[in-house]
Length: 112
Length: 116
Image (cartoon, rainbow over all chains, first blue to last red; front, top):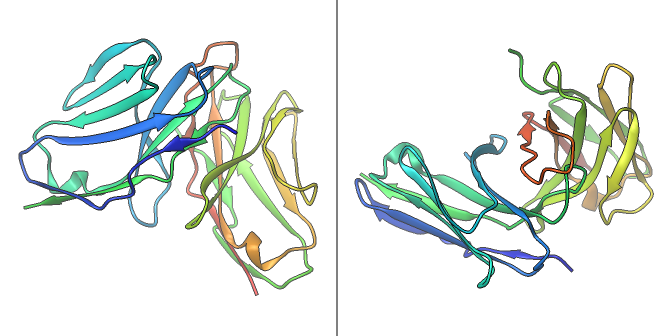
């Protein structure tokens, strides 16, 4: 059974600080990992994807992958109130036809 | 560039009825996936279609089915509705369809189904 685990939160972070979101996955065959952001009542939107060990940066966002530890994280620098949302971590085992296995999401609150 | 379009956005059905949901992918995207989102189970994969063929299926009963047309538009059908089928049904399309694991999904706004 493929599982992706996330702390449901809420995770409360002051404005301007770094928000750190974590995710673990059970299937060692997982090859690619995705972070989606979902605002209340909206559909998920992609923030980043990563498939190589190490860090990947995009603006204020950094995704980190450690396949040996089966661990993925997302760092949000200079957090803004508009970053308040649920963050979904997802993993895919195989190629393009494989569905994503999603975690249940971490609710992030940025306090002004 | 238009996004992924799902219709209807909201619908209410009663137990035992069936429902058909529609999805138009982003122009040029040939892969369409469907997901069910509920508060208890989160987002769960239903199935994926490419070139009118179902290539993968999640762990859902046979009451859930889908199809894809030659223009890449897709429909999913749920027969004999149960209360537990109440959920947000999300369609996602993608352009990269090969072996690359970096197949990025773009989601539509979803169809919210309520079963009474």
